[in-house]
Amino acid sequence: DIQMTQSPSSLSAAVGDRVSITCRASQSIGSYLNWYQQKPGKAPKLLIYAASTFQTGVPSRFSGSGSGTDFTLTISSLQPEDFATYYCQQGYSPPETFGQGTKVELK
Amino acid sequence: QVQLVESGGGLVKPGGSLRLSCVASGFSFSDYYMSWFRQAPGKGLEWVSYISSSSSYINYADSVKGRFTVSRDNAENSLHLQMNSLRAEDTAVYYCARRSSAWNYFGSWGQGTLVTVSS
Image (cartoon, rainbow over all chains, first blue to last red):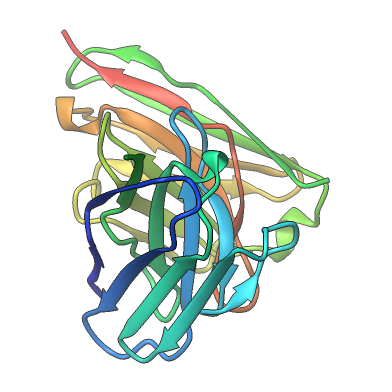
């Protein structure tokens, strides 16, 4: 199975901050990388697929980049509703494994 | 709109069984791979099983292989997970999710159903 490693595991930030989360795959996955947001008690919500394509309705302050093994999710200006846990997921080969998550907390 | 509704969770003793169901609506269920994921309390997302659109391809995480069985009924737009020989470490919220045809992302999820394995 392909292993996905996110960093950091958690971060503290203020409203308006620029935040970046990194995801590394254990082998090249091309652009088969997807990002999700999860809030407590809720199912994950797809934000970005194919490394950089927005899901419908996702605010433009979210962006994704990268290919191969290294990927980044960036939130350009953190909003109160963005405090959540973020997961990357590879879609290159089954099983479609997730990273361990990055919790974004209020500083 | 796409909707996935899980049911069947609950409290069960170690060694017991449960059958989870996921009923789909708002899309052509028979066209899509479906997966089960779980999330233990305070932990991350763990893939459990997937099943192809025609049930030809099925796979399980090592942690559940031999104990869990996934199935689907395309006529009833339903997905199932039969869980036997349950262990305390199977305690989690279980989600069904629809896999996209391209890029293999999961754009639609159920609300989750809690399975608690405890004596």
